[in-house]
Amino acid sequence: MAEVYDKKSPPMWVWIVGVIIALIVIFLIWNWMRPIAPVVTSPPMVTAPAPAPAPAASTAPATTAVAPVALIVAVPADYFDRDVSGTARVADVPTDRGFYLEENGRRMLAILGKDFTEKQVNVNAGQMVRVSGVVRASSKLDEAEVGSLQPATRDLITKEPVYLVVKQVEILARP
Image 1 (cartoon, rainbow, N blue to C red):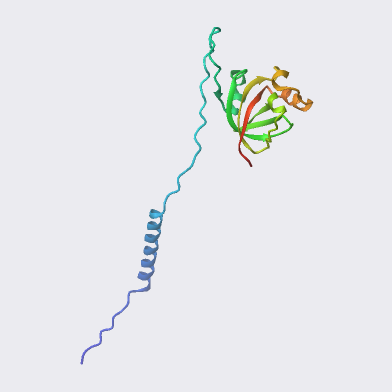
Image 2 (image 1 turned 30 degrees about the vertical axis):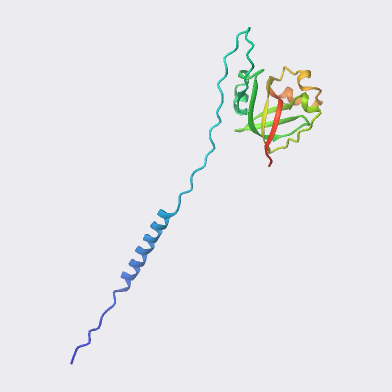
């Protein structure tokens, strides 16, 4: 008579180790196949170097410096009576013709020039705007440049070391 051979299955711990190894391999393959999300950073703001002063007899047109608000507020004397342009966020609109531009925690007062007395610009807090204008010391308030201002706007100007007389404003994004 033939003997019946009884085949034994492997012990339970072998199955458990096999399942753990299979899970680790699946996890590693899944991470390897998954695309890595790129890190998105904004490019640094590029500023134009300050142009050398033109000779007195020169009739060359004035250049406009692209200057961030934080830089103008940090070194205001470098920008007095200079045309500047840039992009910033509107932090606050305390008066009808005055608003604060903010960048990197630094704020600068911007006053709409006399050309804006007839055409209304709807500037609101939180908007991104592109502005062009002239940086003035608060001691140089020129009625011919800004037109007639309300007392509240005049008070704002006297409290700031510099302000921007806005010649052009373009709303880029609304909050």
